[in-house]
Image (tube, rainbow, N blue to C red):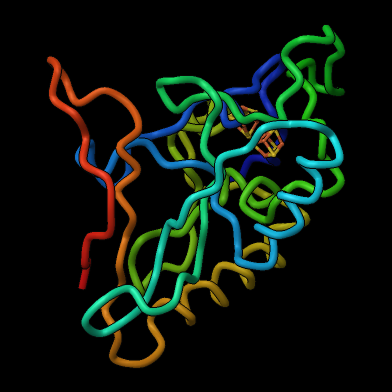
Length: 194
Ligand code: SF4
Ligand code: SF4
């Protein structure tokens, strides 16, 4: 199989704008994944730049209740959960590939550096490429060359090892963000996954 070299599609900023309902609509839309140490750094940056951020838990482990939060998420700033608060959609400046600029690009979270590499959601496969990424759609691929890929895959292995360590359950936080359809409200709070 031929492997295509990864590069962003001209003018695209989709992964900084659109958020998904994950793992299903009842959980609401997710934000940008933050490791616990990144949460503190992102809060500091936001304060320094006077950017409003909403950071809520994403994953926790614990037997009877979520005892330890192992990942957080930075929510989109729009009511529907989209649009990263650090994406510069106002100044008119553009990134080298013609998308909007990330105001914290050199210090962006690991999940942003790794994207479109994402957790494959199974223990057999550590990581895959997100089919929502415009590059993956354009080339109908889930594989790509990326010089940083190894580092990111290793980081995902670390996160996954945390999640699967011990006999704890994994708890996922439902964000109550987005539209449930009709007037129904999406729920908010922890849900035990395993
Ligand atoms: S969705 Fe894919 S192609 Fe578009 S900006 Fe994000 S990584 Fe690049
Ligand atoms: S932090 Fe930067 S790279 Fe990450 S989603 Fe926000 S704007 Fe995009």
